[in-house]
Image 1 (cartoon, rainbow, N blue to C red):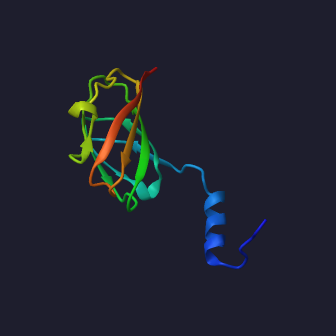
Image 2: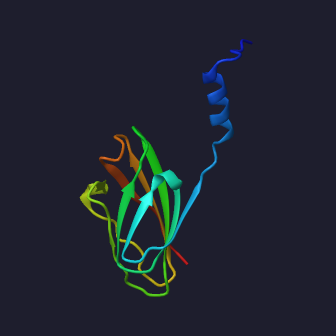
Amino acid sequence: MAFLVGTDAVIDNARALVNVGETVNNLGNTGTSKTINLNNGTFVTATLTGNCTFTFSNPVVGAASFSLILKNDGVSGRSITWPPSVRWPSGVVPTRSTGANRVDVYTFVTVDGGSIWYGSLAQYNYA
């Protein structure tokens, strides 16, 4: 067995292996616009409290992903406007649950630093 001792790269890699957990980025209530700042974590939670326009900021250079757990407040029928950089399967924004207090889970992936995000409605209509 071989070991590299005393190099910064080995120390940095060891730190990276220790810090593999997700950081929760709790946005709280959305209101009518909300920015998802990926510097604050890639496991994002929010409560939809208005017809909301989302923006995404600070993705890492290259490939990245994040999950969004989005809960509706007590009012049904709220709408979402996604950033123009989001692409959906077949070019169609998925139908989401709009009932009061329902929860949907989205995933977003980029391979070009956020120029294009590939979105999907991963889980739908939790009570």
